[in-house]
Length: 197
Figure 1 (cartoon, rainbow, N blue to C red):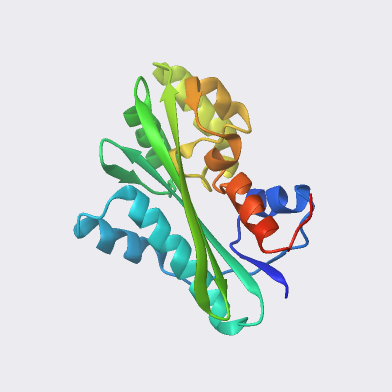
Figure 2 (figure 1 turned 60 degrees about the vertical axis):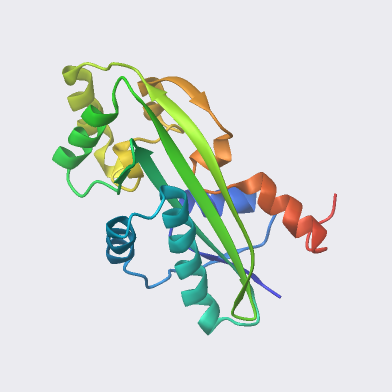
């Protein structure tokens, strides 16, 4: 049985491979924005939105790869029940960062595993991040310097890069913040006999 990551995220793939797993990445064809917008309109909790999006990605790939174990992941940024998506323009990234500065927000990171085209395991983890009251000048310079990287990240920052300077406090594990609750996944794979300790 192969291990498939239903994602185009290089950081998630890197985390899994760095943990010694042999994994292949396959892009799921899912209209995340439409699904997210529909769930938000229904008043779904951000945690449930992350879980639903992770499941949709896993299911889409698992339908074509039923003999493999497929992992779907998603992350939702929540600020006072408002959901943030990946910024589409530098202006949108600046606006998101202006909303986040001086406040605490949550990241909900979900993972769902599919086997034989059926869900067999899921986990959602939460991290809380508090941003400094950063100046407009620094914010503008940060976005200009880092746009090509941060446009792929909800909230318009990456803590594994210069974005760590934006924060005064972080609560939650590093893997959850990067979008994949790795420790619970490794523990589950061990119970399945797929990895040894």
